Image (cartoon, rainbow, N blue to C red; front, side):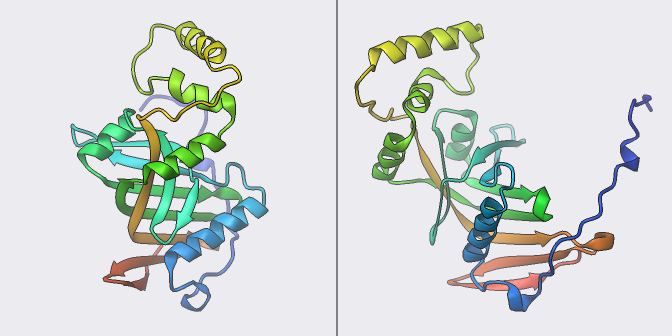
Amino acid sequence: MPKADMDFKSIRNEYEGGILTPSNLDKNPILQVKLWVDEAVKNKAIEATAMVVSTIDRNSFPQSRVVLLKAISDEGFSFFTNYNSSKGIDIQGNNKVSLLFFWPQLFRQVKITGIAHKVDPSISDEYFSSRPFDSQLSAIASDQSQEIISRQELEDEFNKLQKQYSGQAIPRPAHWGGYTVKPITIEIWQGRQNRLHDRFLYIKNNQDWNIKRLAP
C-alpha cells in the first residue's frame, strides 16, 4: 500500500443533526425536499441549491457533475444546461438519472432517482433571458464538454460575442435549455450521533408515495 502523507482513516466528525420520524416528514417528498432546500438557503449553507446530477454514458459508466437547482414543482426538479454537453448526450441516450443534495452544515442528504425530460422551450427562454448578460454569452461561447486548444480560444470567442451583442437582447441558443427530473424514489437522510442516522425512502406507487425507514 502506498504511503500517504495524511491518515484519512483518522478523520471523523460527529453528526449532530435533528430527529426524523414519520410524523415530522411531509407525505409528499417533493415538498419535503423543498422545505430542506429552503432551510439550507436560510441557514446560508454553501451553494445551498447545488446538486450532483449522475447519468449513464454510452459505455454504461456513471458520470457525475454538480449543477444548480433552478426550480421545484409538482413535476420535479429542474436545472439548465447545454443539450450538447456530455450530460445532455447521456440523457438523450438514457434519461434515467439521479440527483444528490448534500448540506454538511445541516448533516442532511437527499438522493433522488427519476426520469429527465426537456422543459417547454418557453420556460427555457424565460430563464435564459433572466440570466446576467455575461452568463448568456458564456452559454454561446462555450461548446461545453468539447476539447479546446487553449483557454485563450474560449476568452477570444467570449470577447467577440461581447462586441457582437453589445446593447442587444441575446436570443437563447437552441442547444441550451432546461431539464426536469420527475422523481420515482426520494431518499431523505439526517445525520445522527454514533452513525445511527435517520433514513427514509419514498417510493412512487401510482399517484401516492409509500415511505419506508431504512437502516443507516
